[in-house]
Length: 184
Image (cartoon, rainbow, N blue to C red):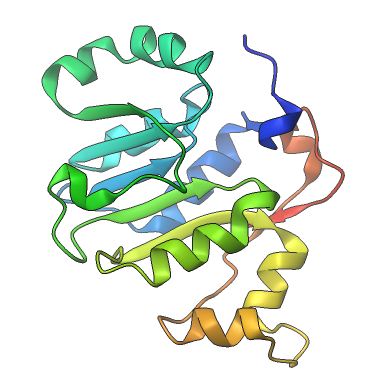
């Protein structure tokens, strides 16, 4: 077991029911290519590999790369999983031969990169077909304008699609537990 790095905003989601909810919300098919952001210890990766044709997992934490390489050695060998050691904010999907709208993003995003992440992928020439993101509840509510008040964030996201909240996740579902709840 790897301990979460606070500097990376890591909180490992290990609750099987919540992981299944995220995958269900993504509505994946056996033809999908998924870009997974921050696979951590690979709990969500396992489920994504069962549903999607291919998973490209981008992990910044160098301590987790050997853990993932060992855990998913056969999937990597078969080409079903491409593990990339990189910062998602510096990553380019086009470098991996993804045509526009040929991939979907599934991620449990750290709070501190949410704005930059959304800007990067929504304004990209190589936008994803969809994004299923686990975000802090307050950020998710701001994006969907749950209080009826539009913000620059909600308007920006709505220019590219229709955001919705698929469910809420209690802080206790993570290790270590964050101080706030999250939303899918």
